[in-house]
Length: 112
Image (cartoon, rainbow, N blue to C red; front, top):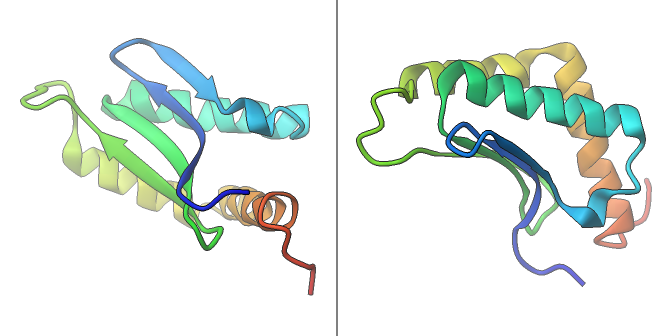
């Protein structure tokens, strides 16, 4: 069904918009809310565009892009913010659960 990277969600400081892939509308509302908060706060803090993407193996990665020469984008702050999110216990659990959800419902893997 899914063979390449799949975008879960993202936010853009340029367009001031948030996007949730319609394939994930069945996620519980509190998870969708947490994702929106995570993405919107990130781009409001450091600028650019943040996209959460599932890789082929089901791992969830943060992809960051910015317009070339954008003086408002904080590249160092971006790396620090992502590291902070990945080390936060609540966000780690959220990301782990999203990976499990994706592996089971989209990749068809069995629970161990």
